[in-house]
Amino acid sequence: MKEKAKIVVVGSSNIDMVVKTERIPRAGETVLGGEFVMVPGGKGANQAVCAAKLGADVRLVARIGNDVFGEMSLANFHKAGVDTTFVVKDNQHASGVALIAVDRNGENAIVVAPGANTALSPEDVNRAEEAISAADAVVLQLEIPQETVVRAVELARSHGVKVVLNPAPIRQFPNQILQYVDVLTPNQHEAASLIGAEGEGNNLDAQEAAKALLEMGVAAVVITLGADGAYVATHERAERVDAVKVQAVDTTAAGDAFTASLACALAEKKDLFEAARFAAKVAGISVTRMGAQSSMPTRHEVDSYTFGN
Image 1 (cartoon, rainbow, N blue to C red):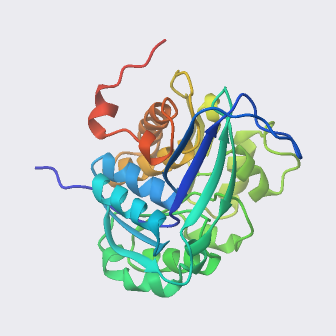
Image 2 (cartoon, helix red, strand yellow):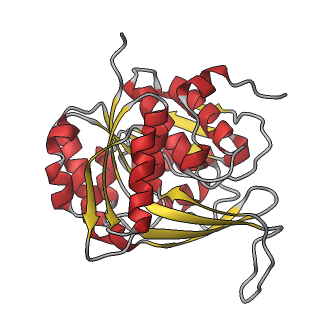
């Protein structure tokens, strides 16, 4: 039997409160929404659940509140097969919560109250060192304290473990950490911010942005471009990977699906470009469904899914 890929995800866990609406409200405006769902989310948790549903052996390092939202998250982790040995119930902080509006085109606007995620510490990461040392890849995002991200990168690198960093939500962090990152997975807005480009990233030249990020020290970069796919680059090769054609319902966790499935494919020894094509397929399936973790497909669904033309 083929050995499972071993993934450690260090990151956030939230409960997502999602409202469907015709359009995202402008500042100071109230709009009437439609369907409401409350589902487990958080970038770290989303990525952990996605990787587990794809068949990886996943351990999550995270903090949740000792409350009903935390219990909801734990139940979902167990259902998906995520190992929660290193998920701490925090008695001092409430579980993180995300308020999400999704418009008729599947685009979203999100506000996060991070709660217990702000208390995830380097010491929490240290407790998972044995699991990290045995992993094929460590997956990180920026919804947790900067020093915790740095410690996780340091530990992974000290054990020769691949580091996949999803720099979202974008915020200040030490650029020198990029030299220890094996694969960086920004969207175009995050890439623009990292390289100090003007504007919001909608007109980003992905080729130039990838070149700049490689020069900053990262070993490989995959810039996700929504419906335009992704731009994949190393120091030796670059290639655009097409998005799959689907009717988007909710894009909330598409980036998380992409990063997690990319890490899984790399842990399964696929090359970066093959891994990116697999990740595009997983992300494409995820946007056809409402919610974050609830939208993540199983490996069987990915292998058997047929996309329209």
